[in-house]
Image 1 (tube, rainbow, N blue to C red):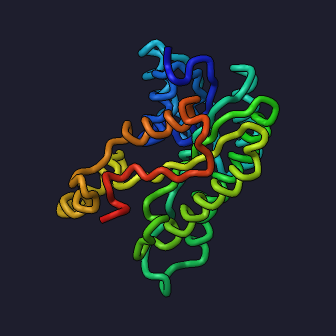
Image 2 (image 1 turned 30 degrees about the vertical axis):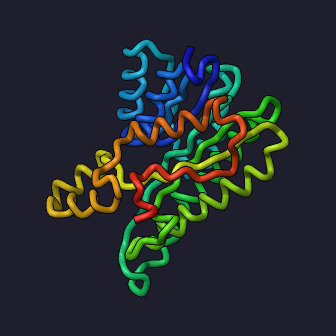
Length: 251
């Protein structure tokens, strides 16, 4: 019996990379999954991967920056599966980087919205759907939130906000049986990072050295941590931030 047997869940940003790995892990452990992404083609590919492996999944298009879209996503999950037990908020996007004195206000605001405000917006409707029976939510943070990151201040600040949002909401909803945690990935070999290496082949060795294990992480390793925190095996864990970074936070 899988860790998430008889549970239904949402994974935002699950068209590729870490989000896709989480959706696949949820399904492999027995959950019925609502795959959500702004990219319909990639989201449908994730569903196909799940169903080809014998799992249960549906795709629902969602723009997590639009409240009506998020509301419709949760409503669709309830319509398809009858309840919402687990959710992972993985969708996020950094709009730019650079020194603070040259950073444009619009870019800073967009990054805060895409990484922090949209996580809150998803939680608003996920929590409402879980109030009667409890559940588990996992937010995706970043190790940039723990140490800061030069020239990437908007993203680091936004993800630090996700950490406090996670802890604060866990304190609010523990009595209703809703556990809320966050996972903080280190440098993970995602499609976006692979593209970066194609453009900057000299950067891979340096990024590997950010982890004491001297390698990059795999999206599946983030997914394993999220799946555990979503499962009943983590039933006494809430308000926590779990770094999955190969020791990057202690280097």
